[in-house]
Image (cartoon, rainbow, N blue to C red; front, side, top):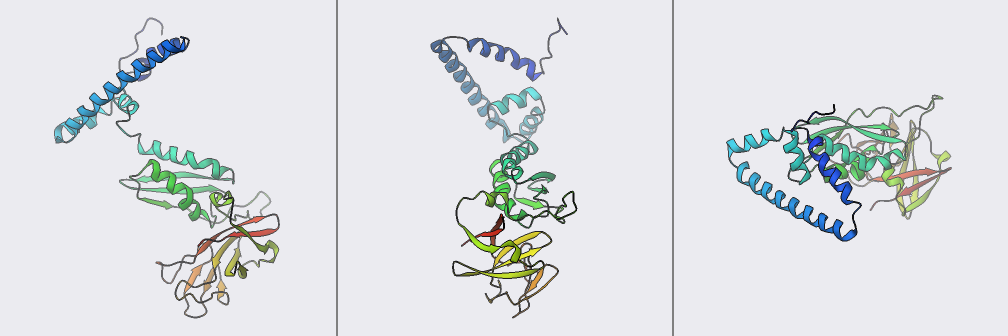
Length: 291
């Protein structure tokens, strides 16, 4: 309301005069504008260093450190310290920034991700959405893009867990959507090798292919496609002749069992099959072999 003075604890009101003065200076000639910018930067550097020394002198004292943390609840104190880079943004805000970094890649492939829970002090739970939900490559998506983005902005996060990974989504006509690859691998430009026609892959079975002299297995089940080395993680013996039942392949030699969806070993969880990126372009399957 006109005539009222903004509360002194209103951060936006305190910043408003600075914003207005900066707008006025924007119309000045370059030499005057640069002089003002240099003065502003020098004052900000002085204040930042004074605040840094103040914090350093107080934080190690138990009582003073407690009062300092309590003071951060004041929006003006917190806002000024945030401006100077002396305190971090809240974890939830930094997590959203990290996910915003990777969402363009996810959404270009019809997928998304959301934070389900933040569990102090070092764990979070994520849920994959859209085409990433139930995708066998979602763990690859996490490792290649999402986890890296989160750890870059939130180094205190140690454990990242995917939850509610369910069946593949259905299209409006009731047919299963096909999910062939992590969106991060999808945009990799090099290393893709033809692995034959998609129609030749039998539902619920594995098909052996020789690619660059390397034997791999392609598995198709419930709209998912995965690719692994034709090599048991136990002794390296071929898996191609192994029995497949309900998405699990059993090594014909020593009975080690693996989930075809992810390569996870059900017999010895500490090992797993070597996974390769795979995609379908038109009617052809392509594989990008990992060393």
